[in-house]
Length: 170
Image (cartoon, rainbow, N blue to C red; front, side):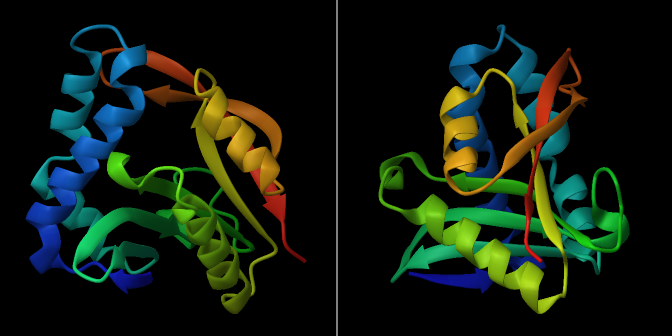
């Protein structure tokens, strides 16, 4: 298993993977139409290309030989969706494709995120997780994250509540 940086030439693969993994994760818990509207907006090629160009965002595919198993998006500085504190690193997107769930890939992505944050001399990592996603909340707690608050997450067609979870590093 290896993590490789995502480039602009990977846009079609990334867009397909992002929509597929997001739909698998949240499709069954959203009202009809909400997820589709969100995916059309959040995963539009122009939106992804702009985010890929941000110098304080780091995008990676996780691969096993020729298969892409998932992807990761990390943000620091002004790329962070909230806080924008210089000592924090945000895990904005961490998704494993459905056929590869339960194989330890999520843990590898968390470990990589911690390593990246330490190399960048950050004192904590944080993320937002939907309050209606108990499996993910348990996963993050198992890996040392604590709920420190909430924020509103704009799904375009409705507003949802996310827990803000943080793990101290230093």
